[in-house]
Each structure stands twice: as C-alpha cells, then as structure tokens.
Length: 59
Image (cartoon, rainbow, N blue to C red):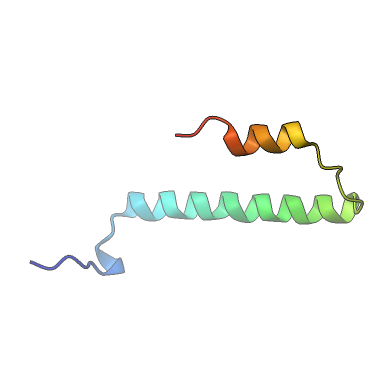
C-alpha cells in the first residue's frame, strides 16, 4: 500500500480549490503591494491591537 499519490490522481475539484486559494493569495499580495506604494509611511504600532491579533480567537 503506497501512501504517496501523484498529482494526476487529485480530483478536479481539489485542483479548483487549490487554484482558488492560490488566486486569493495572489490578489491579496497585489493589494498589499499597491497599498504600500499608495501609502508608503509606516503605521503606528498600537500595543492593544497587536495583543488582540496575537491572542485573539483561533480555530
């Protein structure tokens, strides 16, 4: 019994899901790049916001 699978064995639905997630990440990256050019100054660090993001709800 082999644990490894080749790429050709993945169902079309899995490829579509993978493409959707990849495209969403690419879009987010492009948006962040655009925002960095549009607003080049740094955001001020707010400790309460950092703590909320670090200690906030998790799955």
